[in-house]
Length: 243
Image (cartoon, rainbow, N blue to C red; front, side, top):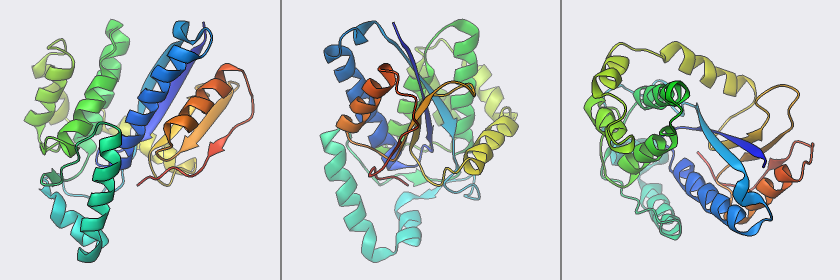
């Protein structure tokens, strides 16, 4: 059995992070079905924060208005159509009628869930991260809103993580210092966009394989196999789209 740790650096308002995550999960399922012995491997996903816009307002604004400001009115429709076409291939029904704002609270929730999983031996964090993506891009829910995030955690953890603990964590600003330090460290280490993936490499002497952007399923599968087979070189995958 091989332990494969995959750290995903992402921002919940990045549509390419959602697409990349879905492609990665497809590759993991394919790897476990087809590669000899892979069904016994332990694949663990962790989430690292990144801010595409740290100065975004804590109170959300219209997603369409924000994208118009960012891209210009002549590019919004084509950009959204492109994402919708690609999303369908990965089971994502992109909708853009919701709202967007600062993602600090969403990162706080993910950080809390990772701490809770470490305390209890559960594995809810990835379900929560996916729930936040789905809320933002498919359900048009406001992920800057405390009560929305409390409900997402409740749904993803099947009620295991106490609502009052989540609400208190968010309203008390807990975890913010650690989140900002992790996001700043990612920038210091050269991350200039997301998604970004590191396979292994949690400690200095451990080999690591990295990928940049929402790679296709085949690239993720090749990376899993390369890591399994023990190649020690650091590979920076190119060609994936990102934010």
